[in-house]
Length: 145
Image (cartoon, rainbow, N blue to C red):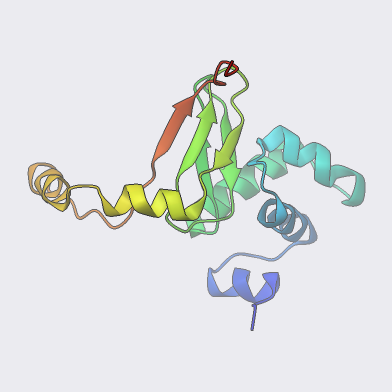
């Protein structure tokens, strides 16, 4: 059974306001990895008392609680994703749009990462790697002729 947004927020110790619920549900349904501004423009017409500052604060709270992740782009802006499972993204250099890599292809790449290199990173940095966030940078392919 899928938890309601209210239950999900309660499990993560987040207040469940109408604005937060609308923002999270819109983000969770989105596959476009919106910016804060894009999310604001999408949710604003149906949500009372929503400011851009509320959007940014909510996104930070969601990321801190582990319900979303921030995806930096090459122009310095950030996009957001409510899918926090281990998966790969492609970021397009010109538009800064982000797309999910099909899961079967992303899994292939992750499975072929040398575990010995990850172990060496852990040892040298004194950390324990508990997840991966891989972003591939791309530009459109030239037409095939």
